[in-house]
Image 1 (cartoon, helix red, strand yellow):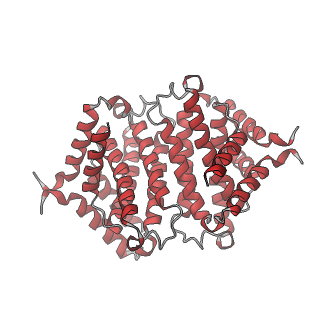
Image 2 (spheres, chains in turn blue, green, red, brown):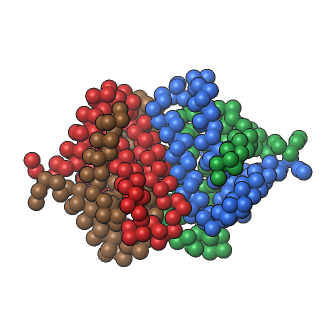
Image 3 (cartoon, chains in turn purple, green, cyan, red):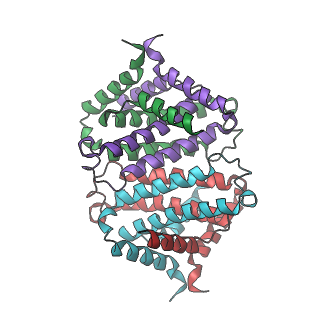
Length: 105
Length: 105
Length: 105
Length: 105
């Protein structure tokens, strides 16, 4: 197993979960993009009434960090799922976008 | 280098980019959550006028897939950045959330 | 009372609610924009697993319509609140944007 | 014309624009919810790198306020459009939700 398989392992795990429940039919790219937006909305809601200082790692309670961590997982899970359905390599997409950013800023 | 370092490598790459521009001060957890929501909004906008069928991989043009791929990269980049700032291990968060999902559904 | 005061009446109602709880300090424009994004995420989540046909008025259950209606109210309430804080006239903003759209499309 | 027609007038204006372009077919409730999320993402992006103080009315440039105002208009336009398609009275929805909030907080 090579060092670049971490994301693929997560994708496979999510795919097995979906297939076991026969949920592929719900996972159109359109619906998965909506799910990402919905989960990102829940993540942003975790922070909406906090000041910048209150949102810093040192200031967050363990319970709050746990909630944030699981909301981040939800966004990540649907992003992995969309990558799977659209056969997109997320790592290479990130690296390509970082190169574009390097040339821009 | 072990097989589980793929995400950490991406996180380091993004961190170097940010540090080189002295942008850490903008990257409060609150602001990064907003950036994730903003990019998720751009991703969902790619799909908003497509039917479910039109959003399928086989129906998307190469150009459209390229746009979607880079929007996904943007969401992923800010998610990696937030994980870095909050010292959250995304892989283990995903695995924990999948276990919760397994027990729920 | 003139015909163009409907939105202003809603804005005043929301403002009274906020003032009575001493919540003005939380309602920075930044935080209110986050709240709008968070509520929009909940609204989009209502529709994410529905097909286009299932999302049509005739196909939605009374309970689902009620849920959607209250999610729309949440988006609208924070939009009214942001308009109040930024002293923006939503009606005239909508009319101006519609004129821009008319000239574009 | 009674005082409570302001929102209905805006809804009619948006409907005429849509009908003139034969865009009703794109305006399923599902797609409109996505459009609201997409525009809310653009609105939140206007604020993501500002501090709370920088996001205050007194600190925003005229140009920035103009951008924010038009992003708010976009969210409002799609919210009006969804209300039209689902035959939802936004004013009464806001008032009902405010009553629920009164009893909760």
